[in-house]
Image 1: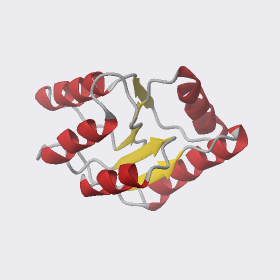
Image 2: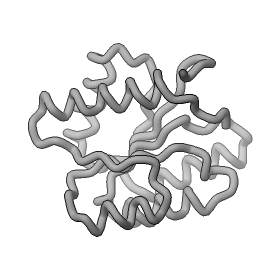
Image 3: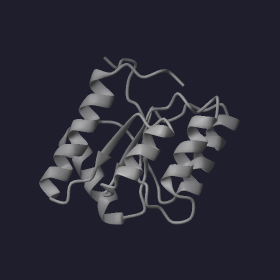
Image 4: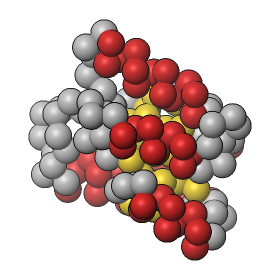
Length: 144
């Protein structure tokens, strides 16, 4: 079980509708975690590197879309997992892509999970709540 208080979550998502739905799912699921949002891969990596440089606590979980403007999610994932100080952060791919190649490449780059965004709003909310329940209440996350 995850102990030690609230874990920050970094959501890397460029679709404002999906950001709002994710925020809503966290509210309705009574997940009190702070949700940080970056709209592209470059800003997400900049945030993580800035926190590392300032010796600030890193997010305990990254929810990463694959289809981002600029640097794509697979490249962001590869950079996080190649960095000795960031690689322990669990990264869950949260994407609309069902392409087997995306699934394979995500796991090859050491994604911790691959979750396809449901199209139905209620299913999307349920999926986010389930992710929160698992990653924030069931598993033990490393302290960063």
